[in-house]
Amino acid sequence: TQRLPRLSSLRFALDAIVSGKTINATDAFENGVVDTVSGGRESLEDCALRWANWACLVSRGENGLLARNASNRAVAGTFAENAELVQAYGKRQAPTEQGGEAKRAAIRAVAASFAEPSFERGCAVEA
Image (cartoon, rainbow, N blue to C red; front, side, top):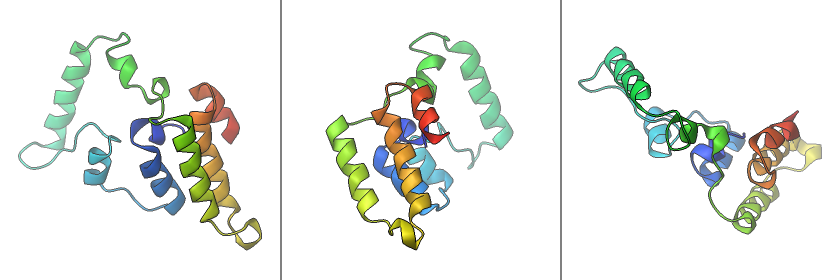
């Protein structure tokens, strides 16, 4: 709930988390959740080796691997835009008395990804 909106978009994260639907490899790639998808002429092993070699060559600093770490990224969009989207998702859920509490808790956790000042504070909301 903290990483997915930082990797993709808030809308994609809310859709995936609230619906609980499986994300296929193509959708994950197109939405920035994964860096690549193996297949076609490249074996899984060759793909893994290519990415491992790339990671060894890339710097570890701010513009390298650290920048790729989801916990170092911000959620795209303004606070107002994101808050409006989260509010709209909350309104679509069943009332707490009718079993909507789990989805509402997930939405609150996703909202913490942009409302809290850090990744760690966002995670603490879920605890």
